[in-house]
Structure formats: structure tokens, C-alpha cells
Image (tube, rainbow, N blue to C red):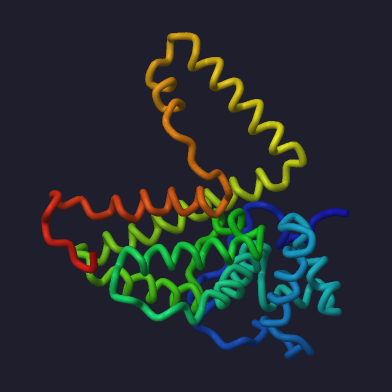
Length: 249
């Protein structure tokens, strides 16, 4: 079936001012018997059940019982619909736990909330790579993350970069986590990779790798691996000399 115009790659997407700062109403014509919220919820349900590729304007229209052309009053293309979907599920991040005032713990809590959200909605990591705007739910969570960073002596631009770095890490890690979980023979592949690296380390040409592999093993559960990586990332943000006073820590 040919793609609808708004499903084609390269569609321009909506102006964020029009998307987020205008009321929930169609851009033209009479108000139909559904809302932007209903359209977005249907698209999210479809992505949760069948994956992001299943989300087309035609499929979403069928879910809400509307003609496909009427959806373009709310979302002129699939890119805009993805923006709506991302912000819709981002509402699940709120209200986050109250800040403790210890910035490392608070920032790690931000990352864990993000990971949990992406695991509930496995299409989200892929959708985030194409994202262009920040909707109201996302901005509310960003505000929470920036408040968590308040004790750090960083300027505003640096704090935004920290949030971007953290979100990028979580998105990449969860994407890899989901891909491995979806592979039926993932355990066999992991074992084969371990055997291969052990053979390479034993050839005498990779002494640093041999030393690294000789170190005591660590738990390899998804949760344990994520926690170790997150600890290294967050704890490495404070680069002041050892012994220097560190806010919140």
C-alpha cells in the first residue's frame, strides 16, 4: 500500500510554536469527534503493540475511526506525530521523586526514570533519534533534571549539555539492551563472543586486553550493567581535585 503523504521520509514536521503553543484543535475545517490526545494515544498504543514501523497515519486513523485526511489537521506528517508521541509518554516521568539535594543520587534517579520509560515503550529510543522539539511534559522533566544539577558549579549551557549527555547514554544503552533481549540466541552469542575474546587475549598480541579480561568478573544482568555504567558517567562529572569540597557529595 502506498504511503500517505505524511508518512514519507523527509516530511518537514510542524513548527514547535504551532505544535505546543496552540490549543488542541484542528487547523482547518470543523472539529471532528476526536482530539489530538486521542490520536496520540492511539499511535502510542500501536507502537507499543507492533513497533514504530507500524505507526502510519492510515493505521492510526483506523484505530480512532477517522478518515486519514482528517488527521493532518492535528499532525501534518509522521514526524510531527512522533513528537506528540514522545511527549505523551514523557508524561509518565512525572511527578518524579522529590529531590534529595544530593546531586549524584538525584541525577541517577533521573536516568533510572528514563530507562524505565524506554523499557515500557521499546520504540522510544528510536523515536528520540529523530526528535526535534521539546513538548510540555519533556520540559517539565527537564526542569526537574536541571533542579537536580543546581548544586553543581556549572553554567546553564553546561547543565543542558549534562542532561543531553545523560539522555543520550540512557537511549543508547536501552536500545542495545532491547536489541540483545530480542535476539533469541543472545546467550549463545554472548558465550561465543567471550570465547573469541579469550582466544584473542591468549595470543600474546593484546596484553592490555588480556589484563582487562583477567580482572574479576562483574554481574552482567541488565540492571547491574546499567548501574555500573551510570555510576561511572555521573561520578565522573565532578572533576575537582581529590579532597576538594564537593557540593552534595
